[in-house]
Length: 109
Image 1: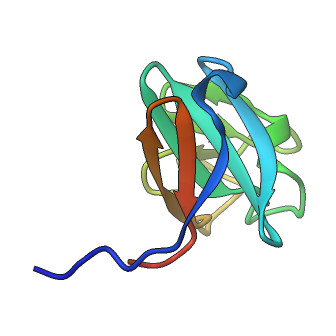
Image 2: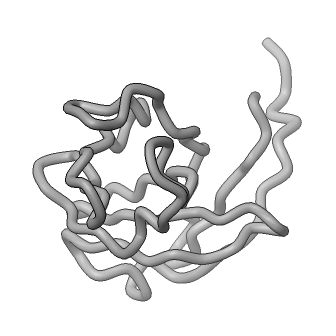
């Protein structure tokens, strides 16, 4: 079993993300949308794969994040679009919560 070699960056506290809501922030130079649904926090690339707009300005619905411009929804777990016009997924990033602190890793593994 290999050790976790991911680089984790503390980005905010759980309470900074509204339950059922989304915030946008930068991890290094990478735009990230953080979504909280209950006790779970998800991190997605904060640029729609269809139109170059911030997903963090959209709405959260049933484990998806909707792009405000054209209505494409992206699955919070996989980043895959659940309907048109987007056809390409957005990157998802690993999240861990320690106490009230939220950490994101942009590493692939």
